Length: 124
Image (cartoon, rainbow, N blue to C red; front, top):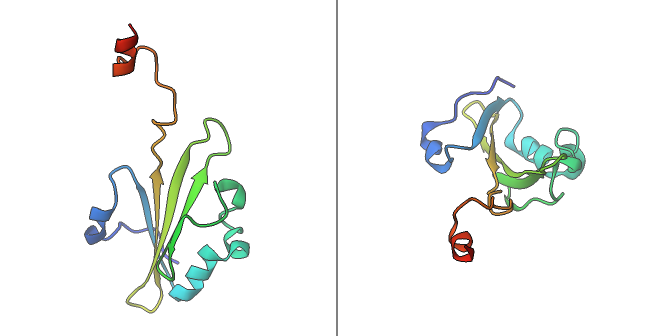
């Protein structure tokens, strides 16, 4: 395994400015890395169920990408998505990208009374 590297600029259009992106190169073949991120007993070693909002993936493209929803263990229990992208590299190993995206928590949080939103102005 090598250190994290800067993501490919061609892929940057698919990633939001606020996303956290890590990219790794592994000597292991993509099928082995895929198993590590999708088989619960293997995934549990480095991404425990207690960190997930649900043990099942939210979506999956077999052999290429899997998405899980994470939840903080302490208040305010923020949630995010983590996407694992797997593709073969030029050396026969795997390019492994981890993309973490914050969920839109503003809709879940109460708005302050002085936010001057339409409803508050109408109530005044």
